[in-house]
Length: 233
Image: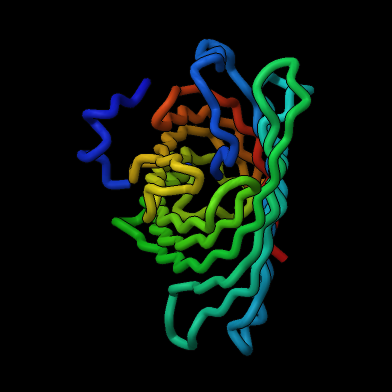
């Protein structure tokens, strides 16, 4: 379902397109995002690593929207379920259609991941992320993101091997500055992402998800199919 701007303030809860995308984007065209997400943690120390690689296309393949490579160091304090991350990301963004124009961004981010269980099967995740962004052709920028995710396994009470589950999330992006240089401005509202998927746990530490995301920013809205491999080790 398409999200309207008037509905956004009511949402509890999107990587960013560093290019200034205009209304020439075909909002009726469905894109595809191919994603690999991984994490590892030393249970004795609480320290670990996490990262993801995402190849995002304006279409099913070939028309690059973004190539994102991200990774960071994590820490989970003893006796706590909250995981903290300090990380870095590099993003290459392509223009819609036949244009070969590309733009690059370097980003540092800090986040807190807060898991929560409601009842026997409702598995919630809150993620609070602050980003410092260096986008080519723009002034230094910062952004805040809030992610609310839900996983609901249908056939057992966790996401271990054999789980078939529903995955939902909403993520809201807020620009903390409006001026981006050379007299240009953006809104504080950057974008919102709403997502629904079905997942299957191949093993205790490997999950597959296939879903659909609707993304809306200040200029346009678009839909993407998502193919996601989640791997912990």
